[in-house]
Image (cartoon, rainbow, N blue to C red):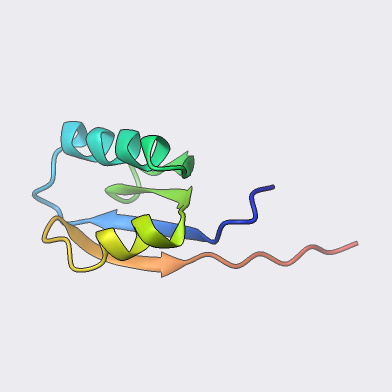
Length: 75
């Protein structure tokens, strides 16, 4: 598991799949890792993001919202 925080990035409805693909590639090239795609449920993906890249995404006009993921492990 990555030690980077995990987020769900949801794009605005007018953003195309190709544009989302480009953002996903940028996550990977900036030290993050896309962990899940939500093309049919949400227009977005979940990813581990380095803090510097997370800051770059905030305020991006194509993004509807970014939410932090939190998981709890049960025995």
